Length: 491
Image (cartoon, rainbow, N blue to C red; front, side, top):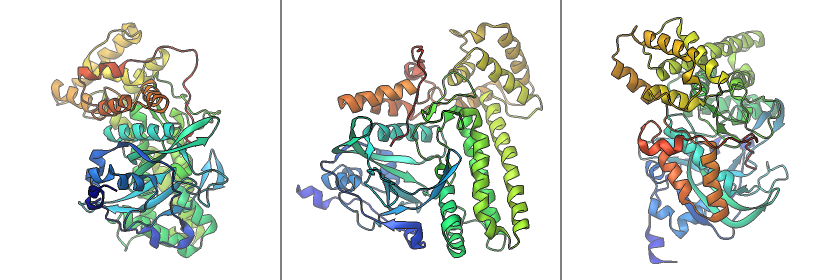
């Protein structure tokens, strides 16, 4: 080993609170070593914010850690147990191909999970090999970082390492491991697991842990568990509204993919909508459109109701009163979501104040976009920049009438035209992770070993609200095709 390998300080600072929870919630397990790990991408800004030494991570030892071949000092690897409603059906689940290395304490005192995805089989693998393919891991890297740049709460990607091994799916694919960073991996499904198979003491311990980790401001003198429910509802109402506002479709909103922290997690069959259509589905397995774009708010409410059910024993000693408290809390979700969404839509149109007619103004625009199959992101981009060329919609009498109403609406606020346009620039991304651009990057990386296309895409996506001429090429739509775009779970 080169001399410098032994002298580089990695910067690990683990404090593993989840490992101190009841042992029924996890299984201690080391990653399964791989043959020939190679670091193909490292998130330098994220590594720095975590207090990690990028040069050390790029070393042979660092790559071995990111591949699961070496355990960093202070780590406590484990596979988490959880359950979940998958397409409405309840199942016992768990980390089938992921291991939580531990919790890194950053120089600023924040706590983040570091998880290796594709690290080998666990007791929850359900006959799977516990591995992951390079394409889906790079896809998660790209889109999670794009979501972060959009200002949307999300897990993030620290690194992707190829394993030097092939995995068998429908074909033979190159293997890889992703290092995922999260505020935590606590899920609605974690609570469902304990509610179904744990004890009352374990449920209370998990709820107390969630409160201490994510909502430390909640007072012990109040109904802490009702406040836990309300805070999770609040965060999810804000998150789903953000998804809708940028046209993001998660694709697999099972309860095990809804976090307590309010972060977006699990970038499997996700994608961004092109032509506006609430019925848009990309996932190959969502044949009935359960998780279509327009259904995401309702599914979120359904998932939160399942979370509320797990907390009933903690909400009140009498079941009837516990149910009443839970139902009242869940009933607030729709109003919270709608408020967040409409506020966001106002911002996308440069509107600062509120009028009752704003909802119809937004609905009329969306209706026209759907009628003429207009691109969601580019329509708002055109409104922001005042560029109304190359679009069927902008040449119609309907749009002309709507545009006059919109301009009249903008006069009924105190803010200047310049302030209004700046609000639109800050609210409407010039670019998103276009599906054809993501596929282009993945093909170059997976088939040809060329990661430059991906790196360029990530660089461009890192500042989506810049509205610069350099972004123009990445706003261009794909060529029309008779075949619908399909995404697949990253198994």
